[in-house]
Image (cartoon, rainbow, N blue to C red; front, side):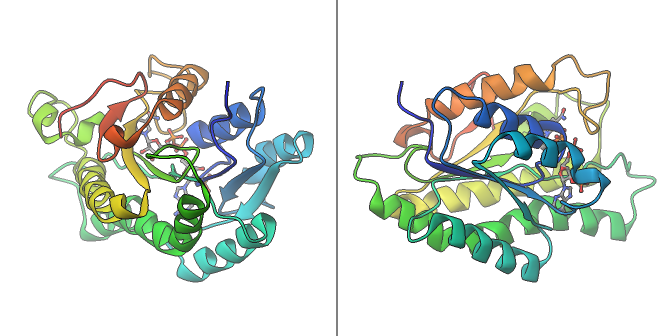
Length: 255
Ligand SMILES: NC(=O)c1ccc[n+]([C@@H]2O[C@H](COP(=O)([O-])OP(=O)(O)OC[C@H]3O[C@@H](n4cnc5c(N)ncnc54)[C@H](OP(=O)(O)O)[C@@H]3O)[C@@H](O)[C@H]2O)c1
């Protein structure tokens, strides 16, 4: 089997789905040459599991990244560039995100803005910063069409952000979270249109309801199972998947 990709970057990779993505990528039979595991506090206690994992895999590079801080993004781009030498970055996974349980009655302006900042503005800043490296990867890869092996941006979303499905889910208004992920979906649609000519595939993926700090113990899906599914989906993405809204099993979801 051909490798999924040569280089991959995962934001928010110190716990939850991000940490498991890095673990499973590193443990592949044909792993990426470079796995950039981004974490906003790599030297603190929050970064311990990631540091322990990186100690076992020399292809994992732990890099500081606070997605809503432009100077952090700029510094991270320099670090990634120094590892890639003159090569491009093939796969960017915008996984970092925050939830909020605010309701119509309780939501405050600051919470709305803060969740939008992390879930929408953050991924845009990260894409802006790494776009030259993604474009470089697309240009230097000789294969026709689009794939994660060539150049791709994957944004982690939720099916709760589907407007059509939203009318069926009445018990979780989650105003800041669902609205921010719906906005991230539109950002991804815009990216897919704009970057098609550059050969960069852009897709949103719903990981399922997963047992993590965000998903809670009530979630039916283990993080291992969700990430196994996501990686299979990534391996099968092609030109026809750009601009798609998929779940961890590869099913299409309505916008
Ligand atoms: N779990 C689910 O059921 C589920 C369902 C649908 C979608 N998702 C999506 O899947 C993604 C991962 O979710 P998860 O369940 O793994 O969440 P999680 O366990 O809460 O982990 C979130 C990760 O994002 C990082 N992060 C948050 N804000 C950040 C910022 N400003 N800059 C950099 N990193 C930041 C966190 O870092 P710190 O440790 O520093 O806070 C942590 O590594 C999210 O985008 C989420 O919306 C999850």
